[in-house]
Length: 152
Length: 220
Image (cartoon, rainbow over the protein chains, first blue to last red):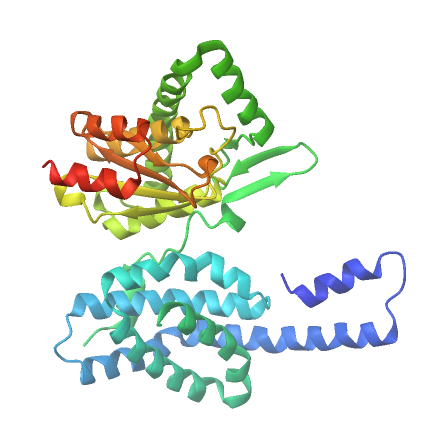
């Protein structure tokens, strides 16, 4: 977890960190502070972000069964929670092992991929607006990782 | 219109209970490993497993397969009980209420978390009464006891008991391909013992999995 900080701790061993390494550590701590803000924002605005996506789906896919839409929403509520944690600790392997490898076959079997592609695009749009470009760019790699793993 | 706040409140959003990072916990000081519910896990070294296969074969000869299969069955019954209890407690619903895909994913992840290999279930012949299980990188594919015969009797027994308990029907399991014989993965066919008799003799004659499945499904 927080791989860069961890590697700094172990590489230092019995020595003080060099100025250059200390600089890297300071940057990572600043990044962590930034990521915590994004994480808190995701947590407090979860319902609002997803309500936007749910409304768009209901408007544009009126014939889609509510059960299927709810299932797709639950998938992405879960994915975004794990994306938030993976972003916080800068750990894409965590995201893969904890949720992506688990949901991949389920999404395929439930045949919700097309619906979820649209849901993803609405979420993408909303998150960009809620977080702003700079903060969104920190979360984006984890969203992309999820999209690439689940919505082929 | 779906109310997301309501959806979040009424749903228990659960992830992968068997994710290896969270499922297996160890304590270096005490040398113990346990699962996330605190049940002790036993690490079996490859050497012990190989020794077990060779020792049993030396003592019992061709009967060692039957002994291992029965041990697997006994283990499988207990494994099923623990698996269903853990899944029910985490997902807050009994195994029978899980969707098939959820159940199979749980089993896959559980198999992987225990280091038993990568399991895949194939339901193509389900209507004909057969289920095929493929396990890649199996922990049970050990020493070659008989160069003509698959050797994962323990795994076959484990699968037989698991799916028998799950379906409440006595299912037999026959291994048709084995990593210890150079195959890319282990293949097992599950079905009623009577209908798998032909498969057992075909395995003994060295027939391929595809040929065995064709015969079984054509004999319906």
